[in-house]
Amino acid sequence: MNKQELFIIFLIVLSGICDTLNQLCIKSSINTIDMHVASLKKAFILVWKIAWMPLAWLAFIFSCTSLIIWLYVLSKAALSFAYTVDSMHYIFIAFASSLILKEKVEPKRWLGTILIMGGIILVTLTGAD
Amino acid sequence: MDQKGLTFKIFIFLVLNDFLETGAQSLFKTAAVSQENFHISQGHDVLIFIGHMITFPLVWLGLLAVVLIFTSWSTILSRIDLSMATPIASFSYVLVAVAAVVFFHEHVGWLRWTGILFILAGVSLVSTSAPKKQDLN
Image 1: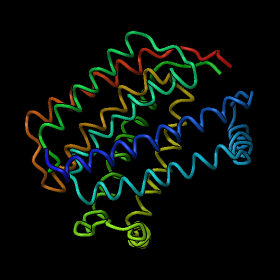
Image 2: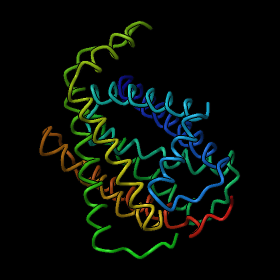
Image 3: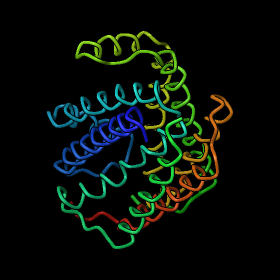
């Protein structure tokens, strides 16, 4: 693995972290709203309520940042490489939901996480082209 | 609202979702390839890069696809459980790799395919381990 490939993987990790922060912000803002979405009208009300939360705007900023990084990654690496390695955000989300949102993570989920890690390592071995 | 089982209609939505995801990634890739030789070496290069990208209609088309994905995904999740939807949706890992081979002439060897299969299996396990109902809040 050369320096350029390492940098690309670093950027994919960075974009995965932005995605995870985005999800955490969205989930935390939705968690504060006690509402059952049973109709389209209620869905719009939910979106309207979320739009007034600073956390949701933070989520939006994280998702824009992630996209910019992602476009830069795609300009340098193969799509089949980048998209696969990007599945890393499942791992980040599993850790973050257990550590920050205090959700219970079952052994089966950790096993899945290990499989994803194994898959990413295999893809990484093939190089970024 | 009651969660119903996987119907044919929802399955079509899921497949559509996979194709939209592949479409969005292909559009982003096509736009990004034009910046192949652009390297970010200073802080303000980031702004130049953003400037290049937002003038690409393909990037906006890709974003439109992302919005459609969000809408169809929300519809899917209002009908079936996340643990049922995600394993089918993660088929996009295979579809994106096929698109990379067909549209961008990338070489995907057996090692990379094996890695993709590992990820498919992992994503399925991660999503089916989710509690059926979220009564936490």
